[in-house]
Length: 58
Length: 534
Image (cartoon, rainbow over all chains, first blue to last red):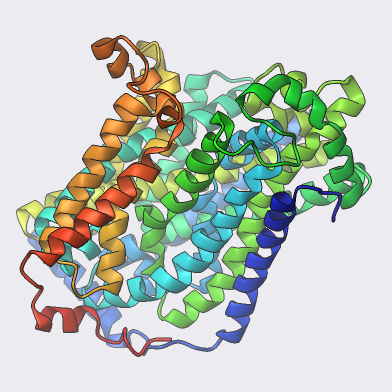
């Protein structure tokens, strides 16, 4: 198969392609799925303010 | 090769890299931006950044050359790179890492572990291990890039080392993880295009997939004549079970690197850069394809290069390249590919090295500033301190890459083992408690610390006294016992990860069973939003 004769090499050649397909199919099926809410917008403002305070203190 | 075209292309590439680094700098406003790209990275950028960091020049040139010598059995590493390094890493580890990291406001892998186990000791010790041992892994990447640049641009090793370190240093120090990830995305795209063209041109030149493999199989007797004694059974066959070569390929190359990747701090941190698990789902698709075209192509092209060299010179690749494994891929490109591709491939290799180096610099910097200094001083870190930490990390690894080969006879050989040393140590010391942190409420702080120490000391013992590839160049075993390794076959070819990782996991589990449980309220905080996660 594919010019290869050792079954372990044939298997790994196919597994490389198969595992890539697994990633692709998983990504497509779960394209819009996400288990938790996004980070609230006010968090970004909070982080920025915290940084300013810390820089001022140091 | 036309030097002027090469230099002009390189300048355009560096200008684009510089612009993206500047963009990262402009968009970096606080420590979360600097350390985690603001936790809002695009999935495409995240996946390419993860992949480009994962794959360094040595994965393409060094391991591609190894595939030219050992054959297609190295594709087992590609399989693990995709299945473990992408699918398991993103789906099994990534989702929980992102959510728990956000719950605990963690910005680095040591910080995540420290906060999960409520132990500043774990955070500081993990930071120290990273800061002490990552420079030698970084030096390995820097040395590879500098040697490559020195040959192709006709400049000295030192000039190449200092100039390119400085270029990468600027955009990492100023742009933080945003600068790193933006440039990684460009570099990853170049790498992808370069490797896709490489596999298409190679198979086309050799008459197609089946014809190339058939021709390679016919060359088996030539390599068995050379390496049959250590277990080689041909380019398209697995090495003889239990032979020296089998242990090297399976334990060191396939499992050592394939599993070691799961606890790499510079990769784990990327899971915390995205807004939600939706981005991780999308990144899994991109990451899987990317890695197939990196190591999959490098190992296949490495193996089938034997067909070309044998047709042209009557010699297999290993002999045609003067027994220098690292020369096989560059020589194959030079002999078989058009000039424009030679230039593109050089830029591909620059990209591979620079993307890995930039993330290493960033991780060393955050280990020193956030995980060690800030944790000991019990304060919150600022961007300024992270920048200083990164600067110190860069200086240390540059001095190592410059000084170790110059002042120490075995310096180059030690640096060359840097990747496996760091991968092995990270897996053995961090992986069991990382898995425990994400998946078990029963693993305790005491268990995590006990497993960490076990992993560290067993790994170090194995590197220094048993695994001959490292113990021979480190020289301590020879100095103390008058021989390069304490024990003979098969122990001297069994990779440390195979011994240290199971022991570390066992000790983590046993010590957790006999120690005080973690408070329920803390576990509730850690696992908030995780149990109902898809």
